[in-house]
Length: 487
Image (cartoon, rainbow, N blue to C red):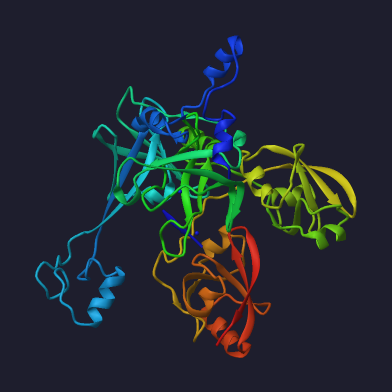
């Protein structure tokens, strides 16, 4: 389970027949019975989820991931926070260098757990991409069913932008879930999660939908379902059911200051996951359309400036040369208010709407330019998969003094892929950099509007900047200014 920084009058409701008797008769009663929820009231008038769990439980699976990595003479648990504490106080531990049981140069074994669910009888399983990670050489993924059967799983593909992974196990006639329509769910509805929090298989928790279409920082492709269902590490990838026993979401993230559940969890709508699944089956990867623009949100003042009665749409702040948007004639200052006849209510809607379309797809964009509505046609490019991983090669350097970040210069290939002339890839943050909200994977483009492409140049600029300055940072497809205060 990822830590997100980046799973009323009840008696009155019951009396009206939500979980109780349906006050209809004849043909209407038969119709109502056919769509009745799987949840019925218990003898105390409260919802009893037992029947639902019996129905859906066999299709929910536990996923374990074991990865072997080569290592030197380092202590195998050196990354554990307790290791440094014990080392400082000279406490001997089995397996430490010089102590009995030290493994020497054997492989380092890391283990992870998660959840998933079977979507087809021939063995396709959906889970989160972060559950299986890279799933490269040396990684073994095991799927365990509720009846204790275990299968080695093949990773068909992953999509980090939506955090979806598709697995395949070699089996037939498996129990499967039914999928529902997340769009039809309502805030306040009861929902049930199943999974393996902390490795406790087949754990069931329940709650309500707290909000829909929730936008999270740096998550432009998923309109999350927010719930108050208890979700903890190990629940990742597990299903979120409605009262009819249909999967409407995949539990993915929690908001937490402690690492554990604090009442806010997020699920990926099932329709998003199924679109990703279809592409992973067909292509082994997800193909997304790309316009080639940088956008920002609209507030009330900006809306009035651009002639809008209310804040809506996506304001274009930059157009990539040679991109689909450039060829279509989009300009900085345009406001995209519609795509193929569908209204763009918020700026975050646009990346998802474009990303859901395939490359080379023609689209009609409704634009507001100089107070006038116009329509332009564009043929989408393909968005390239994420290729730069923070800290991927260990070449990061201390970027200077008390700022608290480690960074490295972009390679020529990375700069080309990101359409940049250069910059510094942040590999780790602490101190003032972390407090300001900088993240591993961000790319520093400038300090106080002065471009920077090397660590030495950045250190020189930092030495002249004083205690207050601003960094221009590229994060994903967006550019933002991040104010920094030292001391």
